[in-house]
Length: 325
Ligand code: BTX
Image (spheres, rainbow, N blue to C red):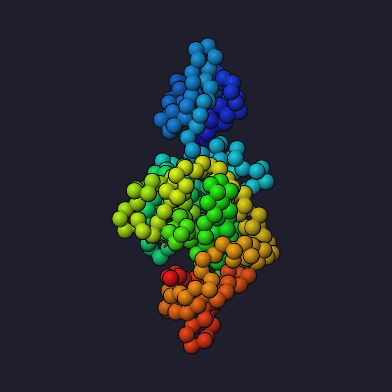
């Protein structure tokens, strides 16, 4: 993978020019046959590489996948998230793969993504339908976050996702507390933050984001047809997933730093969140880990805690749970 990425980097650096096989083999320390094998593999992944005898190779186009050299070029240099990336055509779950990378010492900001997931996961052991065309990514966060503020990670991510979808597609979806991005009540994206805490400090987070980007409406299984949708189904146009991912990482990066410094994070975005939210003011049922609450979703505080006014007039704070309308 390292060699493959280096080849892509060289081709991208040459812009419209040619890179000779000789130059690649010398700078990478591999044979020209090995260079050719890597180029063939890249073409299988969707890279358009032109070979001209006596000149070398030229990049004419690349697939819309989150390979490290492609993603890095779309990010502002100050963005720490996404500077390292692992892309695989198929995986059980990008969250699971990100944890495996974390165990091997992967750095803060690593982005793991896949063409498709065979065991995509949602919250509470639910599964996430993840065919080709979606944006299935996980970001490894290795910044200490106070445990009491861990819930903000998901809320900040939801604002970043909404902004990124809005900016790249013109579709401005709603946010359903805590982790769904919806359009006309149908789920467009789900967020799954898995945390490793040591005492009162969250040491690592794998932030999983699944955006139904370029999935045709009829590709959803019958049980999801009425509750799920995709960018492609809503706008009729495929979205550039690299642009979408870069926009969301660039937005999220400084918010995460604020959280790690224990500065206001969600508080700064609460207005934007409220303007986009589809939860407040509604009569809801909320399944928390311990009970079922019924009442009006009254407000969300600066830490992202949801308050429900029940029929008896009592106000209950909800730190995590599933909201049903
Ligand atoms: P959730 O538990 O809030 O939602 C899961 C529920 O959503 C499912 O039970 C199903 O009803 C519905 N659902 C499943 N797949 C889809 C879909 N593609 N679109 C809309 N609705 C669906 C939400 O969990 C968190 C999902 C995170 C997914 C990402 S993808 C990258 C990363 N890797 C991984 O394994 N999970 C995350």
